[in-house]
Length: 204
Length: 221
Image (tube, rainbow over the protein chains, first blue to last red):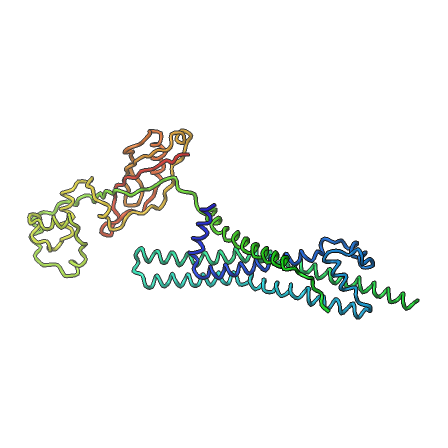
């Protein structure tokens, strides 16, 4: 295992400056991914069945957890307009941060192979520099080998980071879409209930 | 009106901690994939070790000796291009060239031809040259390893030293066992060596026959 770590450090060092950029990119990418994942889990919408939260709308005393708090907020309105305003406010506080984080994550995923490509270019420049300045001895061959190694390792690393990042981002986008769908469904249900209440009041 | 969950300091810290740990962990995992991938794609170690080679150059058969009188008849000095084309002297040739008994002048007309004659006269076919005498060292083109029979596996490890001649076309001729740790190894080693192909070593720009001594190691297992 320590041998594996040693090899990793050697590869990391052979990648040059592009490797530092790739590591920072990977940290931001996976950091944002974990952050979004935890935040989506905190919302708890996957753990409360529809039957339960439909019941909670008419029985406020039973509400618990994050969905309970959410219902407390959206069912406070007296009219349809107020309910709609509540949901609008909810979207701006709940959906927008996710969208912003997902957008940054998407940029990180796209930039990982590009950073790898940057490493390739600097590696090839180092190779050609060695070819131009060297006299063809062992030192020159070593410099050429270093340049080629830098060129290939950074490309590989960029792709290795981008591929799982892409799947991770897709998974999170899916989770985010489900949350959005949940909120829309909740809005529809709440509006219907509010409308029915109003109809009953008017009839009375 | 704003919906916000009252986050405690502890829960926020816990969230940030998990985020940082997750980011570092995932990054580390994907960086660890790099050496793993290289280990997987690495080719298997060759079972045959080719070590440094003591070469023997077999000089071409001697041309028929030219009559002494013919040499004397050549009176004109050669044009300068010819002397430029003459191959550089090595130490043994230089010794011979400086020996006044062989020719009238060492810048003489058919200098190279004369030298070759002299060298051929004084060295038999088995003259031993070091590898440095070859202008271009031989290169292996095709080198299959020996096949392992059950018997061989049981007796391994072992080493067989094989001497063989590589002809001008790079084929192995007359492989013979010089030394072997066990007679079991000789047959597969000889069979493998017979299949080897070389890009022959060159001397003065021409492919030459040379002799090689190669140890073939049968690793354990």
